Length: 198
Ligand code: C5P
Ligand code: MG
Image: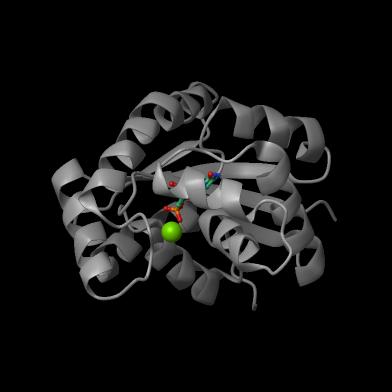
C-alpha cells in the first residue's frame, strides 16, 4: 500500500506540533516534524550537516531539501507504518520540488492541513514556549521576525499552490488546543480517513 501523507503547515507558533500529537493519538498517524528531525540531526555526533542546520534554524531559513527529505524518508521507512502527518513541510519551493522529485511516487498526499493564526498570538506562544525553557535557539524575538518573513515569503506561496489544487483544509488555530482540535476532527471526519489504531 502506498503511504498516505497529510502535510501540516502554519506560521511558527500556530500549534502544528500540539495538534499533530492529538491527531496521531486519535487517528493513528505517525507524526513526523521536519523541524524536530533537523534538530535531531544537528545533535547527532558526526553529522556533516550540524552547523549548517543550526545556522539556518537561528536565522529562520530553510535547510536544503536533500537533507530534510532524506530524514523524512528514513523516518517513514523506519516506522514501518503507512500514515503520516508531516509537520512543517514543504516550507518553500525547494522543499516542494524536492519532495515531488523523490517522493511523489512513494507516497500519496491526501490533503494539506493549514492552521491559521494571527501573528500576535503566534509570537506570544513562541515567546512563552522559550520562556518556559523550550531550549530552542529560535524562540526569541529576533529569530521569530526572520521565521515570520520566511513564512510569508516562502511558505504562503506553497499553501496557495495547494489551495489552487483544492487540497488545503483550513482550521482557525487562534483558540485553545481543545477548541482547535474540535475543528481538526471535523476535517478528518470529512476526509474519509477512518480511524485506525497506531
Ligand atoms: O517547524 P519548526 O518551527 O520546528 O521549524 C524550525 C526551523 O527548522 C525552521 O525555522 C527552519 O529553520 C527549519 N526547518 C527547515 N525546513 C523545514 C522545516 C523546518 O529548514 N521543512
Ligand atoms: Mg513544531
